[in-house]
Image (tube, rainbow, N blue to C red; front, side, top):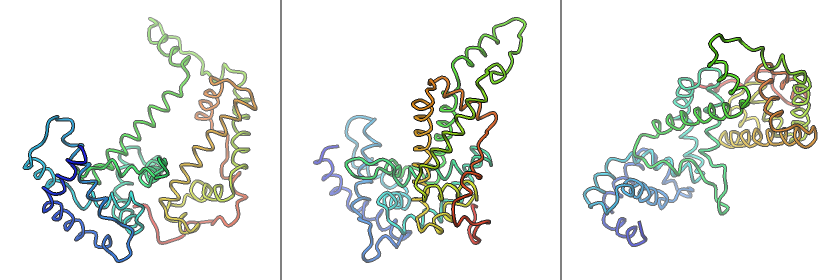
Length: 320
C-alpha cells in the first residue's frame, strides 16, 4: 500500500482502530504508564502492516467492509504486546515471559522431547528480542506477527519450524559418502552391513583430540563473563531467569548472548580446525560426526574454574 493508502486507512477506520487500541489497553494497562517507552504509533503501523499483508496476495483493493471485518478479527492484545516487546519495553517483556514462558516450555517438550525442550525454547528468546541489526535498528521476530492468530499459537508454529530447521541442518552435516553408502546398501539383494565408519578411520582418535583441543582453546579465549554465563546455564543447569538474576541481566539478554556465544564458538572452532590444524571441510564434518557418537569433551571440567558458580540452583524459580 502507498502512503496515500496508509492515510486513507487511518482516516477511514479510525473508530475501529481506537476500539482495538482500547481493547489492548484494558489488557495491558502498563503500556500507558507515564514516561513509558511504548509509542502507540507502533501499534497503528502494525495494524496497517497486518492489513497490507492480508490483502496484498489477493490482488486488487479490499472494500472498507472487508478491512473493517478483518480488523475486528485481530487479537489486539497480543498484537500490542508483540509491538511493545519488539520495542524493548521492559514491562511488556516481563508480562510476556510471565504469561507465555510456561506455554513455550510445554510446546517445546511436545515438539522436541524433554531432553531438548529447554534449549529449543530458550533459543527463541534471542530471536524474539532481536539479533540482527539493520540500519542500526534491532530486527525482532515479533515484527512478523500480524495478530491473525493468538500469540501462543504463532509461537508454537515458530518453535515447530525451528525444530524442523535444526533437523535439516543436522542432516546436511552428515557426510555425502555416508549417505551414498546407505543408498548403495539398500540396493543390494543380500545386504552386507558395513563396519561403522569410525572403526575404519585410523584418524578417528586424532580428530576427536583435535576437536577437544580447539573447543578448549576457543572457550579459553572467550570473555570471562561469557564463560560464566555458559557455566551457569550448561553446567549448573540454571534457567535464563536465574542466570539473569545472578548476572544482573534481563533473561532475553541472557538468551541473546548465549546464542551469540554458541555461534561465535562454532565459528572459532571450525576456523582453528581449518587454518591451524589444516583439516578439510570433509574432515571437519567427520570430527562432528565422531563427537556425536562419543562426545569426548567435559564442559563442566573446563568451566569449573569460573569463580562464583553456585553449587545448586537458586530457589524460587522454575521452568513450568
